[in-house]
Image 1: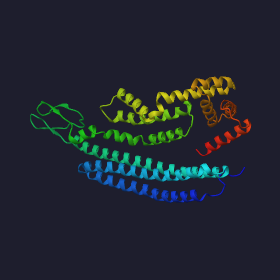
Image 2: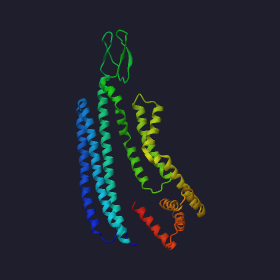
Image 3: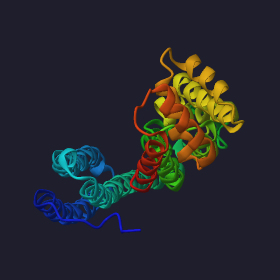
Length: 366
């Protein structure tokens, strides 16, 4: 079989690809330089101690804004490339169109890789710097804990240790009870979300695994519940890694609060993917696949009509779902049903082979 990437080079897309690759090289250097510069700037504010706190927060906002700007530049360059292909593909001959789709696929992979480099690199850098600031604040809080507090009655020093909420201490010298409040550094550490930043750093690998899983899941045209199960598991793993550490570090958090926070974070991480409607769609498609596996096309048609008054769309979706889940035998049978319900005038076997070839190419270039 001929290499599907072979074919004449279209001058318009060749120019677009050359421009894209030039932009890609420039943007790649911009990503690396920007992350290094931002990390160095944030490190400088951390080293400044208490005096650098306000500057750190301002620099953090600027860093997020700069990363967002680079993201827009990458998206714009990718958009220009897609536009160039979209202009040429509709009028291309079949073999040329196949070559163009392969060329687009290869360039898309480069764009996705650069976008992930920015997203992961930016997230890791920002979270790590916030965690470093939190640890620096914890060190200053620890110094407070070792500084004696004066007894309210006799002024004798009371070593109170780590006090994160108002606590009563009895003076060893005079016996008077003194209420000691958290010092300013300790209060800031426990009040302003710094423990959460340390926990976020500890869960970075789990976050990255979840994001990559979501990206893969979104490439499935018609996902099934079994496709979503690993995404749910990784969301729970990320939330658990984050909040179980929070439960160990934060004295205000008990087991019940950890459990509730894990459930909420895992649910929020899945966004619309975990809503009732997409869950129902996945369950319905799984039922269609189960029926198709029996070979009863009459039952498949009944299922399709239960999904839509016009069964053509559900049947076409089911054929594609079966194919992308490597159920080629049932997919071929459902394609035959699709040919029937869509009242296609072309020769059935030729039409089915053409649809199968299209779906094969779609999988290879998705």
